[in-house]
Amino acid sequence: MKKLFLLAVMLISTGLAFAQKMACCKPSATQQFAMLASDKKFRASHKDPVKFHFQSAIGKTISYNTTDGKTANTYMLKAKTATNNYLLVIHEWYGLNDFVKREAEKLYNDIGNVNVIALDLYDGKVATNSEDAGKYMQAVTDARAKAIIKGAINFAGAKAKIATVGWCFGGGWSLQSTLLAGKQATGCVMYYGMPEQDVTKLKTLNCAVLGNFANKDQWINTKVVDKFAADMKAAGKTLYLHQYNADHGFANPSNPVYDVAASKEAYGYTLTFLKARLK
Image 1 (cartoon, rainbow, N blue to C red):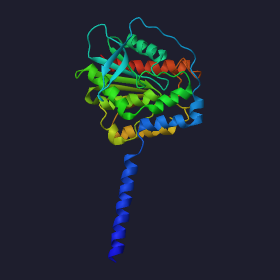
Image 2: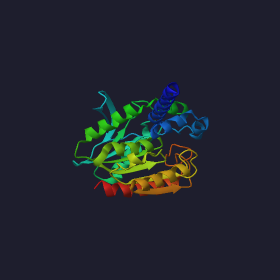
Image 3: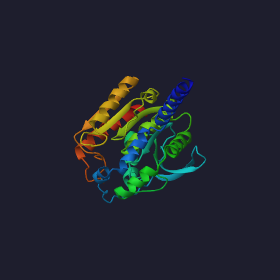
Image 4: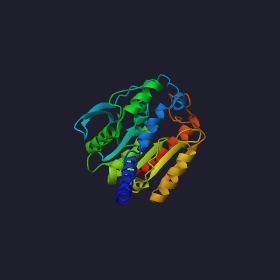
């Protein structure tokens, strides 16, 4: 009887240990998105971007310290008049390329007096095809990405009001950046990125979220978006949700699936949302 009891205790302990291991090893929302790069259909759905060149007269590459003891480079457009308003721009899975720099400058001009920081979560790597994009995206660790984001928040300063925007890979990281910004967060815009699925984490959001999603997206699909809407409601947070009859990547003019009408409408909502929060 004693042996049976000890065996039962061992089985229960082993089961609990396994359950705890599974819980701790559950991939994060950003890791789940990165895992999609292993899917041939996902890679094939991202056509290689058309050549796109943009040369800015005001944007500059700067470096700053990251919280892991390293440094990071970023593309910054500094406000003409000193302000504590900051917009963090996070690139899609191709990296910090000329398209992202152009979008950063467009937002800079249209919002008004704001500091814009376009982050580089790939540490200098830029892809021109889906194969490399997938490799670079999967090479990003949550620890390094968070260190880069926290470094940017520290660079902005304790008094900064921080809004975020990102596309695809950057759409998910836009939301994660807002979570990391804590009480400094003032607004978050996601373009077809993987939402956070932990309601407990969503409850810590300090601001509203605007989501621009594509109904033809086979991965960040309507089921994923519906769950995000339900999770945000359960967390007691505000989500402004806009869905378009378009495909993943519809807002990128260098992407063959670029949708002019959907992109224009989404940008209009995005600009109105950000301007109201970066006064």
